[in-house]
Length: 260
Image 1: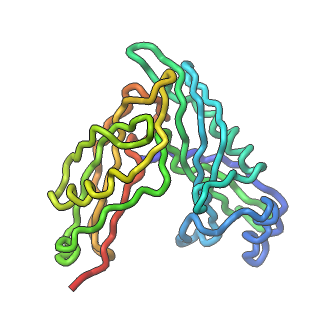
Image 2: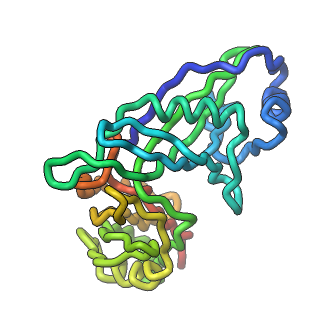
Image 3: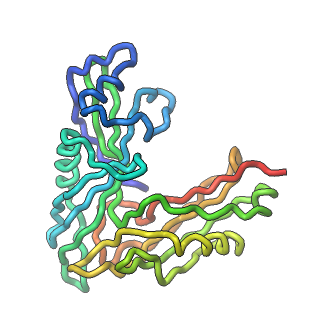
């Protein structure tokens, strides 16, 4: 389960009448926001989500110090607008992180926090901001998804696998294991793309973290009633984490159009 911080900060006096709040918000934040990150849901038609990633250094007591904060909804990462970034930085430095460990000793580490800034109108004059889906761990750019096996897509067959690996100093996955693969064809599809994946690794006491990380991959036909599996990802041993955080990295979802 992803950890969500519900923070009641409000941007006041934006004059958001007749559903023009988004345009005025763009002006307030320097014209840099795009209405692209979160799909509209029933009752949340004016919700705006901005995915981000932030560098964070965590000392041996669990106190975090946040560095650069970048938006992740652009082709190239760009800095979050200054006013919003200041609020995000203060919010990310308030939780107590669980420090990295070497044996029984807590040590300093560096990692990355990813999540979404959610902005929504409270009324015609106020915006409320909160952080949602926070995760602490290694990050990557868009990972190339595997190809859906043609014969599985043709028969409408779903599949899943949990890919567990370590990350070397250059960001390459190594010591790769495929756990609970529903089908050998699913595992074979992953083996074609994983060598292309790249990550920014965490560091524990100055060295690249050797803890394994896990990426769930779910194949399913579009419009099917398939349910996303529950994965048992390995919990952190040495690397830092947020209390209550789902140890899995983001799920890669591969959907296939119905085939005849």
